Image: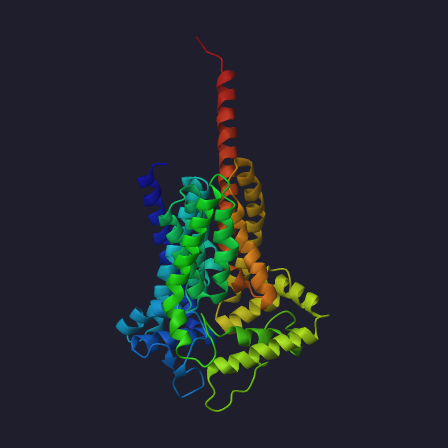
Length: 430
């Protein structure tokens, strides 16, 4: 396919994706219950737009404090919209829908980079209608931005492998920074995705591989340095991207998550009491310590807990409960969650076939498979949630598109063969 035709078709798909996301935002998500995360991101975006940056009153508090409970990217992107629209939640949600449409474009470019232009368009089309992607595009949450960083990282990693130059290495580093500034755990993209992918490029001499891996790593570090420096200057305890891991460790390592209805999940009721005037980084440090202590004292239960966590993330354990939780705590309708679960399993089957197809073609698979490993690690460390699966969803869509493209080829080949056979058996009446 000529590049111009590809880009025109990709733009058309992205436009349709944006239109659908806006309709979803204004008709479905608009009436959903606001989650605590939404209120936090909206509050941070408002504070940034007013010039207070990340010094604002957290939920259920009337006093401004220094905040770093999430990565800054979501709030920074939403801040201009908050400023121009008098903090309109609907306008900020539409901004997220714009970012979701950009994710569709990036998935299309990734599919083209991995395989062909047609694979790219199929991948973009699947991404446009895939519930597990668009469900978050109408909410003020970080998942859409994590998808953006994930798709961008995979795209530049494949470009770096195809054209190993410093420009693509810098691009991969910036993409990693975008991912980790959306969700802190995606810092794993650097050591577990980009660097190994470059080091395994055997057609390059070792010196060149080390140089490109170093450029990507250094770029990512430089890109997040301002935020890290800002955090180190304003908290009593060292804070790099966020301090939320303390609450995550404690909420996922307590009595109610090691057995019972929330087995393998997270419970916000497991928390430490903050002392008056105590710095939030100190509170989170105590929470982290208590969570790790509980896990250490219950090591015999930990393997089962981790298995339950993985089951929740990968959609095989207490699916109905996870669907209800998404509706109650995130505002995603139950019908959308069930549609996402069914579509996910369909795409998983297609993705498995796509892996075999790309292996036969000699395509490097490691970058597409690495997000699965990263999701497994993050889930084992924290707790099980379908939201943690976002990086792997990008790979699933692209791999499924490879299979769909192969099926189209097979159907077209059979039709051509049937037409040829029909011509062979046609008798010339003359």
